[in-house]
Image (cartoon, rainbow, N blue to C red):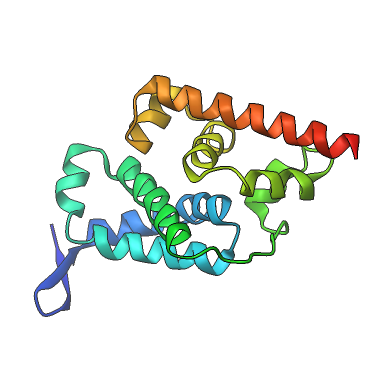
Length: 170
């Protein structure tokens, strides 16, 4: 396997470069759906890649690199939210969001309500309905039992239904 030196003491395999190119669109869309900010999503994914570069060969050999990357994105978004509560304006024009949001009558309202969900619930909903992941996959990606993943999706949908009902009654 050919390796490329980035700087002294750090080198990457050409397979890492290929993986970054192939994984970047989905990771960016996933990060955007979690944080609702295009620039922050790019920063999150870049931070995740910079941490994964040293572990890539081991993780790729185990076959868990994609799940590990998604979990890392989820954790990074959650960490950033704990450090600060940013004021964001939803960018519904993003293709990944538009494809999903077109199915909802009031997509701005749905998008705003999704952003109010706790990070773990929002990640579980995105994985379930955007990536069409099974509950077992969601649990593996987010590092939780399948039952907990199922519970996060159930609670998130219940909260969204309740909030939608409140909004409709206004």
